[in-house]
Length: 176
Length: 412
Image (cartoon, rainbow over all chains, first blue to last red; front, side, top):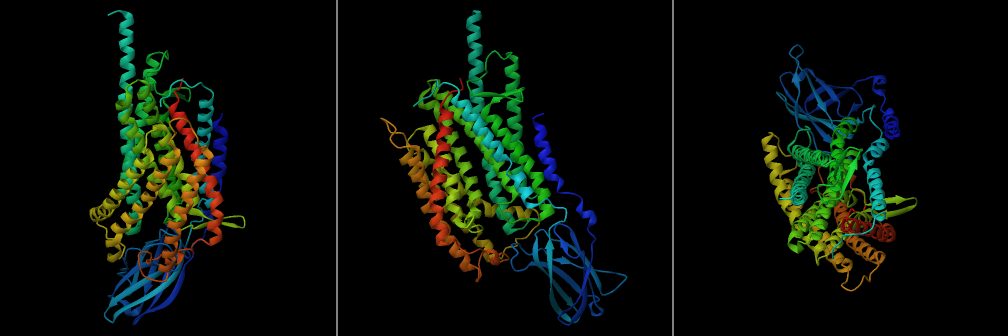
């Protein structure tokens, strides 16, 4: 029975998690960009991007056929992260000049999608700014800290119990 | 052999065997913890140098395997000791160690129980941390909810091991074996304290640059000296006053310096070897990657040197005098707090000024996180930190005093 209040607290804390994600309707964003000599449309979905969820990026341009398109996520100002590994976009066999790839961001904040193109017309580069936000179903910061620091309660109880136990018995063996 | 003689021999056998066994268990727990602390450092710098693409990276595996080994050892000891206690129908304990009953069923030395709960806390923190990262992203820092929970678990584990060694030391001294038989327990206490201090230093590091000040209402307070005064003295005071030998605190400081330098020397090699084994490349620029070893040894060595200085000071103010105790615990704690304030302010201010200077230039911090380097602590924050640091030093020293008293006194 003593564990019941503890379970109640945990359930209350986790209640905030809720399936909010079910209400989230993913949307997309399309931008027109120029990477050197190449003009292209860049489509991102979902928009805004969510951390730890794959972001699909589609790049399309008439002059892009046969080119090599790579993508690196570069942390923008204020983002304490490292650049992501380069991802090569795959050309759609049924639609020449259209490339797609998935990229997953592991850190929340401002990023820039660094798109690099190498093709018959030479090389080009463009930066597409995005903001990666936390998952809508995430446990809130204060809830996380409450659970994370809960062992301190155990330590405090142990200290109290141990001291009470120590003071309630006579000293018998000690050296020095 | 009469029944009386046989019972005496059985009692001796029952009593003698577990002490040796628990000494071995104490060393194993310290070894697992030491390897886990090495894994912690490896993990932090792996994330800086390589990134985190997968949960199953080498440093995580080192931490997890040592956590599992500690858990299995604690569980085995609890089950074995419970069986022994029940086999003798609870008439007497099988060791002179301080034994407790948990959940009305399990019977084992208090240190083992505490270490087991610490391991359990760490094991709970791992899936929670993974869930947290999947929702919030990876936070590049020690102060994240479940990183702190895992560190608390490791600290509780090490506290349990200190209890075990303190108990073994008391029994060894009480058995009349003299200094010789007490030596392994003294060494065990010192090694375990070294690992605890190493982890506590990691826990304080965000206070150097990332969170230079905290606000208590309208008052800004410099973080680092307060953290040092709150987290370090209790370990050193408990060790000095339990062991009671001259220069115990300094020895622990020296051990910490050696351990920190060794870790600093090994970790860059471990990062390169692990990355090659997993087919990964370093994300840091080559120039920064080459300086990683130097940076690690210098930074960790400096922090350990700080503890060594504090250890020497605490040896001087904490050892009981031969005739009588003349210094009050409050005065001893206040002196410790004052010295930690001076050292903490000097170290943190130097690093904070250097980091904010590098904000506009190239260097180790220049890849990504430059703009997030906060401004150094203000003069007001430094001054206001003094009374808080003194109070923290006193409280921490009193806690260490209390622990030493508990460890030196027998269970019955």
